[in-house]
Image (cartoon, rainbow, N blue to C red; front, side, top):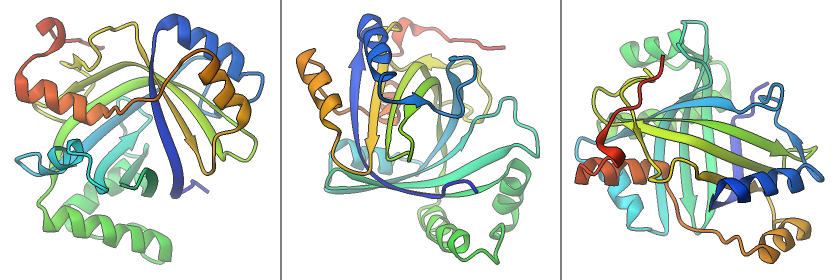
Length: 247
């Protein structure tokens, strides 16, 4: 069964290519590749972020409130077919701790949900509970897909999945004609060689990891993919002022 609830601490780090390569080598002494990884190659993630017409969710988030939330649709498949799996997620942050809940369904079921406003798998109590929470936010705030964000991810985890370390690269977005089509996108990071590392843990980070980061002066920083996309959109300052086109 797909995991549908997550509660954890998350920290983010911007890395050079050299730092990323070093950390990947060191981390493999303690963690193994995520099941999505095949032949040690990154996998692809595609997201739609939902917001109001005036981007009130992300504007509030950028002000760093004590509590914030966002809704997104995520998939690992491209191009999408009707029977591909998608995840409709609500992600909340309160005092530095992340809670994520999601509905797992097919792309076809998601289309039916949007058109008919019905909950897939209504006999599943947890699914129905998450659905009602997401649907309330979507309908109350008249949320629409406002940004497309995609990237490649290299991921590691421990045996019980209480610790995950991910490395994201080629992070790209679009805020015009937003859909799950990976075309006409812009870079989110000015330096395309950079990687975004995220450490996600249900408890305090293990000593070996804290020591590794401290010894090599790798420090956490506040970073939001959607936030960076919004800032570029609102200023019109797209890096290199050109599109990335993917076939």
